[in-house]
Length: 287
Figure 1 (spheres, rainbow, N blue to C red):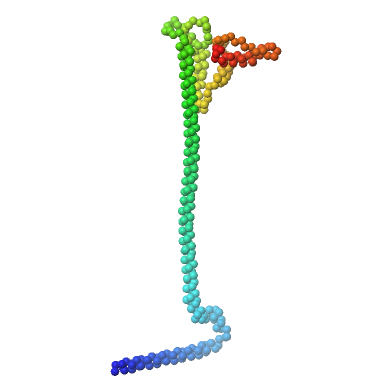
Figure 2 (cartoon, one colour; figure 1 turned 90 degrees about the vertical axis):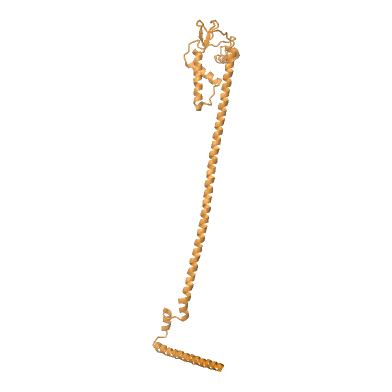
C-alpha cells in the first residue's frame, strides 16, 4: 500500500515537471516569434548596409567578439603585461646581482692593486734604505780604516821620534842657564841646549793641523788625503808666493851634491839639474 502511494506521487511529480517544461518551451517559442516579428518590423526601414555599418563602427558586435574583447583579450593583455613586468623585474634583479658581484670584484681588485703599489713602494723604500745603509756602512768602514791608518802612522811617527830623536839625545835636567832653541835650522857648531818646535817648523805644523781639523769637521772633504805630491806642491807654492828670508828652511845633507847636467851646447841645463837635485832631496837616505 505504501509502495503504491509512492509510485502514485512520483507519477504526479513527473507529469507536473513535464507540463512545466512544455509551458517553458512554449513560452520561449512565443518570445522568439515575437522577437523576429519585432526585429523585422524595426529593421524593415533600414538600408541593406546599416548592419554592416554598425558592425564596422563597433556598435553592433557578435557575442563571440564581445566575449573576446570584454573577457579574453583583457585577460590576455593583463597576463602579457604581468609577464613583461615580471621579466623586467627578473632582469633588474639579475642586473642588481651582477652589479653587486662586479662591484665587489672591482673593489677587491682595486684593493689588490693598492696593496701591490704599496708593497712596491715599501720595497723601493726598503731598497733605498738598504743602499743608504750600505753606503753609510762603506763610509764608516773607510773612515775606520783611515782612522786606523792615521793612528798607525801617528804611532809609527811617535816610535820613530822616540827611537831616533829623543832616545839618542843627551838627557839632562833643565836649568835656567840651559839654552832654548827653536827648530829652525841646523847649526853644527851651536852648543847643546833644549830644542823646541817653533818658528818656521811650528808654522808648518799649525798650518797642516788647521787643514786636518777642517777636513775632519767638513763632511765634503772627509775623503781627502794628504799625499806627497800635494804637500810638495803646497810647500813649493808657499815658498814662491811668500817672502821668506834666506836661511828660513835649511836641510842638512849627508853628502855634498854636485849634480849638474849640460845641454847640447855644453851649458848648464837648469831644468834637468833642478830635477835631479829635487830627486836627491826626496831620498831620505841622502839627508
